[in-house]
Image 1: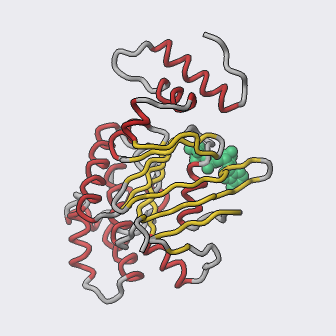
Image 2: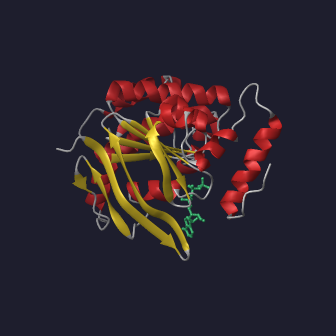
Image 3: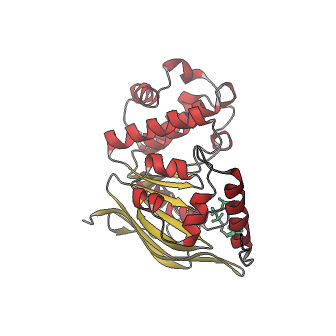
Length: 277
Ligand SMILES: Nc1ncnc2c1ncn2[C@@H]1O[C@H](COP(=O)(O)OP(=O)(O)OP(=O)(O)O)[C@@H](O)[C@H]1O
């Protein structure tokens, strides 16, 4: 069996003239956490969608536990098998949770699909407890919950399937900073206890710093830098990574310098030549 949970090799996807994903390769270690960062349009989401099977690649291979994921398997059994390996949590759980379905019914539906024979009531209690939602939340509908609570439900639903890998696409981007921290702590606990591997798609370098071991930096569909998160964030080698880091406000930083870095990033994204100063 492979030493890696996930191996992505030579992924390529174009939309018309745009090479959204261009020869992207990386690995995720067992129980590892990998960040994919880059500005809007750099190809992060398309990469994630290919990995979970929501998007087709024109080239390249995705392996989970060394086993190639067939893009062709569209049947129910193939979809269920893929879901058992990889689950995804999106930015806005409101869109992926049915407004009429209570929290416990959301979890029950998922459990029925994947584990028809287990005692669902006790597993639902366990899952709610695992994500820090009391049994009182069990009866609630999504609109009765806060953004952070809804994201906890989305995480409970994803881990209910006991996947090997969780792909989190801007999963805390819509939350207040203090709620973000709670959710990131929860995810760190879950990783420690279950050995699940994370793929964090984010534009937020603070999130990457908090919860990933390794990071890849994408720009216009390509990986421009990859390495241990601590190394990349403290001594970025690629000018684009340096710009990304310079555009993040930190205590004591000159707002003018941040503004300049942001303008340079915008120029780089549009393909304009960098301005001096
Ligand atoms: N279904 C599609 N049809 C046409 N173009 C697409 C499609 N999906 C993505 N693209 C294009 O591919 C490129 C990469 O998009 P992608 O969403 O993967 O980037 P991203 O880094 O995740 O950005 P964001 O953070 O804004 O989601 C962009 O130029 C985007 O416009």
